[in-house]
Length: 118
Image (cartoon, rainbow, N blue to C red):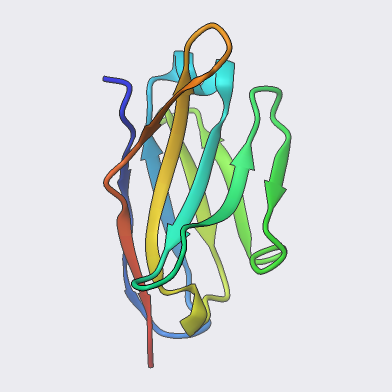
């Protein structure tokens, strides 16, 4: 199963935290890395964060300092820790993974919904 599965979304108040998980075969995440995106209704899909095969992490300016991407070696997942959430973080969060010799095959999960509201 190469298609990722996201979990961990929910309804929280501003300032609270959530931890999202992306379940993906370790062989693909180790070789090709994993990206997180988000999409709110009526808006374009937005890149949020990346974890490269060598462990390098990158973040969109809008989430830098608040979100953390990493690998949970115990659960064999890639997580996205969301802290200090804001109403504008409300969106469906999707995991994107890759496979193939050049990591040129892409797979999207169904997404997990995050709602930030008081």
